[in-house]
Length: 220
Image (tube, rainbow, N blue to C red):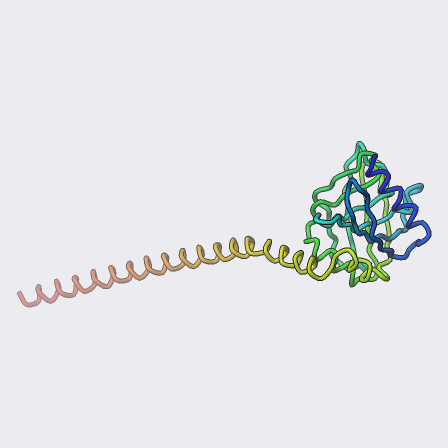
């Protein structure tokens, strides 16, 4: 119920700011204070053609990244794709949460870090989001004009650096596994070289023994 009230307040606030990023600080006695940045988009699936994208953070909480008004998702679990400025890369939300009324999709995990996602939102011109399930798809376009100031209001420099460090901390596992593979290959190649050298030494030793034997026969 409280979550629905928060969404309702968001919607009432953002209606007068169509296609422009807004940012605001709010809160209540039960949930505490929070900051949010939001923008209304243009969807392709009536009546869900005015979805709203949010970045929100409660005091002492983690940043939340979610979408409302893009469809009804109480029973279906959509695929959500992201694209910036018609670039070649398409990103995907790989773990989603949903509000009780089925209106909001919370992006819990993406196939890129939240640091990279928020950085792209701040620096890009347009963000395209496709929400697709068995009932159809909704292609949504968001303007990123003014997004940098709005995102910075919610995610300050210190938190942004923290997200950056977290994204860097996630990388070494892949690098270590890659280095482990290289080291294994090097070890295998080294073992093969040593075996080949030993075989050559054995052949040379046998040849020397044959030569010595032949010399002994000649002496006799």
